[in-house]
Image 1 (spheres, rainbow, N blue to C red):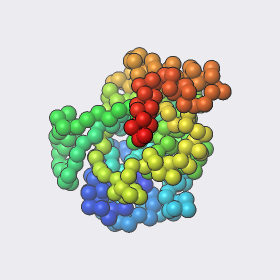
Image 2 (image 1 turned 180 degrees about the vertical axis):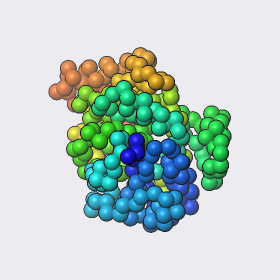
Image 3 (image 1 turned 45 degrees about the vertical axis):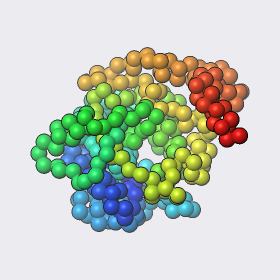
Image 4 (image 1 turned 60 degrees about the vertical axis):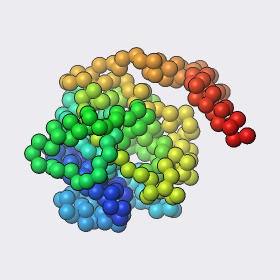
Length: 303
């Protein structure tokens, strides 16, 4: 029985750069101790990649009418094909190192129901990684010199015990909204949301959006709108890593420091609870006046 089952639905391996960074990521997962990997879907090149990398491949993922895999099906298949103590859905462009497993192990000893999240480090990767001994130290050094810590709004993996997330809506993978809902769901259920950014380096390999219609980011995609509907509306997809209840620092869980951003976020949640009858954007405009002014300026510029 392994500690963690990582599961993911990679993009097609037809774009050379996407294929390369996905192989980099999955290869890093296979080098982790006490971890098994499940790749889900029927994307072109996936069967060959799974075979070459020596990981489990399950094809029969349910899809929507556009052929996009459903996250509910991914969760179900991962549960049915794993006996690990922890499950982790992860994007197929994320490089993991052994500190990830140690963070998962520490969290598992400290909490019964929780999710583990982290900010990612963005890095331009243009060639296959060298996974010879010492690769983690070499990569960490490159990331510190050339990488950028992504803002707390992005979440590229969620690690959790199998008893959590047993009722996932039919979100589509690779579209916005569902990842924010994961944090909202944990907060609503009273689970600990553990931010392991201080203890772990998670590396995102930068890429374009050529795999999406018109090569545009997923935020304006119709399937994103459906994800938002399934999540219960805009208010439920505004949750980010700033809403973490704990941080993992070494082997201890601490309360996050109260930064200006976290204070504003707490104030926003308080106002939403008190003025639940107001439209969502009214509360947002009160808490984030700068964003509101930017929106007004955009409207003026269009005229």
